[in-house]
Length: 183
Picture 1 (cartoon, helix red, strand yellow):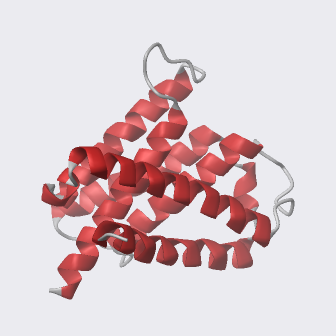
Picture 2 (cartoon, one colour):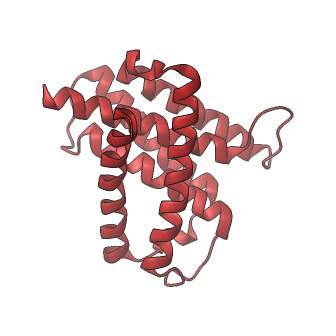
């Protein structure tokens, strides 16, 4: 396994651990959220990251690392919701099934990342974290536009492709943060 794949595993294990712990605390209350609501929640997290990057300070002590983790987890939740649809019964998704679905989508994202890294030569490693944040925000605006068009596109991929890309860009940012903290 190459370095990026190993780092990806490390990051997604942290993200999945938080997802599982929150499932134990809250159950699957998120099952009531429609895709546009999830997109907006991800937007709030990305916008907060950008605000902290631009201001250089923050008043709430939750760091940008936790916001990127939130983006990963909300994107996975959005992909699950696209498959299952919304539910008004927050108890309808057991932890084991939710974890299986989480792994299904996170590993699809990893496979996509590996394919793109092969083709692009890991160009993301030369990017700044702020650029990764900007790309996530762009992907969110694209997703919002597709949602506002009732999922119809003329030539572009659908919202699911944008969620996968946002997972991967967030993981890349988390890898860069991890590498910076080790120095």
